[in-house]
Amino acid sequence: MRRVWGCLLAAALLAVLAVPARADVIWEPYGDSFFDAHRDEMQYVSRNFIANGKAGYVTLWDVPGGSGVAAQYENGKALHVSHVYQNWALLDVWEEAESGGWEETYGWTPLADLSLIYDCLSFIEEHEEDIRSYQDEFSGYDGGAATLNFYEYPGAAEIKDQVNLKDIGDAFVRDLAMYIDLVFTDEEGRTWGYVPRYMGCRECWFCLDEPDGTDFPVREVAEPEFILPREPALPAAAYAPYVLVAGTVAVTAGLLVWFYGRKRKECP
Image 1 (cartoon, rainbow, N blue to C red):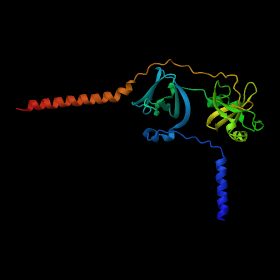
Image 2 (image 1 turned 180 degrees about the horizontal axis):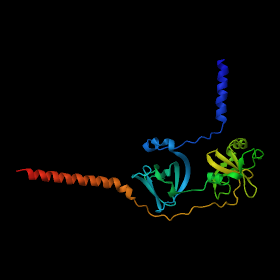
Image 3 (image 1 turned 90 degrees about the vertical axis):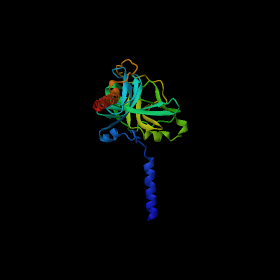
Image 4 (image 1 turned 45 degrees about the vertical axis):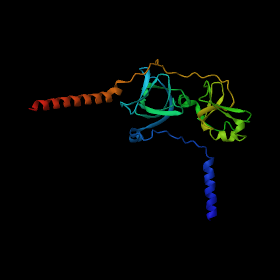
């Protein structure tokens, strides 16, 4: 009986491993008391935006409506939004450090100071009525392509990712079909498949009729109105803690002067 149960358990594990992995590793600010206190109110986003503040730059605060400045960026910089809390966006920024390697900065900025970069999800939202579930449209492909070109959306100007099909063997057609969720037919009759995740490519499309195609018409997408960039200036709120400390010091010094001055007068 133990041997039978062992075989059943092994079969179950193999079945689990055979299912395509779709889970995201969700980034969170480690040890952040505000995030932890409002965790249930956070909306996970994980999309890219462009800095587009009214002042010509955006400011990252330590907490929504706080006074501590984590960083500032001129308009036009691409920024990754991890979560949204009410009307505030939590940005997670990785930049190359002067000493080498990479350093992380995160902070909050009003969502109104950011413009979403048109992406795969934007396309799905815009063309929701024309998108259908995958129904084996790719099953008849003969496997003649040498490469597989992924795009952010059908008609995107540039290739997002590329897979060398010779490196993954003849079984790629069967495996790839397991990852296709949605299908879209463009204005010229080409069929495109949406893949949430495959071989390192996340949330992308490829042409089922021409998997290695590169000469597709570029789709025009709506672009937001951008505000000209300006060199960031530290907001007045950022000076508040320093003003408070300076004021406290000044008041304390004044009281000490008054107290000791009075003592001298009282002495005979």
